Amino acid sequence: MSDNHPIQTILAIESSCDETACAIVRGGREVLANIVASQADLHAQFGGVVPEVAARSHIEVMIPVVEEALAAAGLGWSDIDAIAVTRGPGLVGSLLIGALTAEVLAVEKQRPLIGVNHILAHAFASFLTEDSQPAFPMLALVASGGDSRIMLFQSDLSFETLGATRDDAAGEAFDKVAKLLGLPYPGGPNISRVAESGNDTAFTLPKAKLGPDSLDFSFSGLKTAVLRQVQELIGDKPGLANLKKSYDLPANVVADIAASFERTVAETLSEKLLRAYNTHSPASVVIGGGVAANRRLRAAVLAAIPEAHIIPAQYCGDNAAMIGALAYQMAAQGLAVEPAAILDSTAVEVDSSLEVM
Ligand code: KG4
Image 1 (cartoon, rainbow, N blue to C red):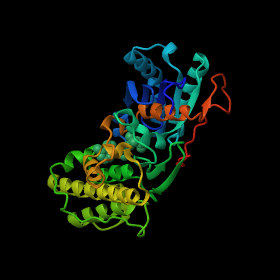
Image 2 (image 1 turned 135 degrees about the horizontal axis):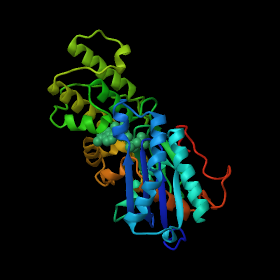
Image 3 (image 1 turned 30 degrees about the horizontal axis):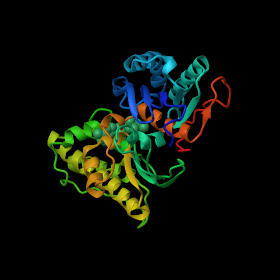
Image 4 (image 1 turned 180 degrees about the horizontal axis):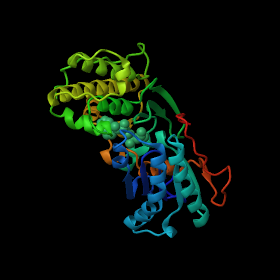
């Protein structure tokens, strides 16, 4: 990586789901501004993200968020070398607002444009805060609301997916179990909050192994096991038809189920990461994605792999600083940097599929 690369200061935009974010990152690691306008309160009343509501909100706050980032960094456009934007995966309406904003700014300001994959960017968030940067080959666990996977990156940014979820993402399981327990959206932080007073061995919940060498995950069986447990406790008739129902349980029971569920997810993710570590002997290990903010998961990963890079919680959830971090690495490799003055099919093409690349 050349520190003399012409693209040093990147203005990055992220709008893949329900956060409108803009960050300014210098040299791929120094965060000069990191603005995140969350829509969580807007969607809480619906119990989850409503795509049309998300897209409309992005339109309203996108430009103010970009202006706020420039003001927070104390910079003007003359200081910005390139613009980066999330190209996917995510909600198509949400992605389009970010991509169009970035394209228009790139044309107007005559700056190169870098389209970044959101899942891969979660793996590069660790570059933002560490004194010593993660080394390659880099093993990454990304656990978010839409995806859970283990990847191995080489220094040219090529990567191999070693394992991925076969059904629900880890964050999705947190959100669905929270709903079942009558806890508000987003589920992860709320499960963590009530789990603090719970007994994490009160309930034995299943860990899907998926074969002796598999690094894949499956969380839908765990979610169903929680439902069955709840139904048994309150004498409700068993059935998956109730998967979207919220149950009214005593607070101590909710705390015990939440703690047991959290422990099971943390152990499942950290055990698979350790297996990948032992098999591939990487030079560094990073974790990322919204679920990486989870205290039990962070503790479990550190217990298994003491040298793992544990990023500050502010870079776990969706943010634009991680988009800037990966964009810098891509620019230094000469990857996917588009000249500015093009508003056609060669500009950033949004990708709403769940494919990583
Ligand atoms: O990475 P992220 O902000 O968005 C996606 O790219 O999907 O992840 C959001 C997910 C949600 O499912 C949320 O419940 C979960 O991350 N999450 C957590 C915690 N904070 C957020 N899960 C467990 N523990 C947390 N502390």
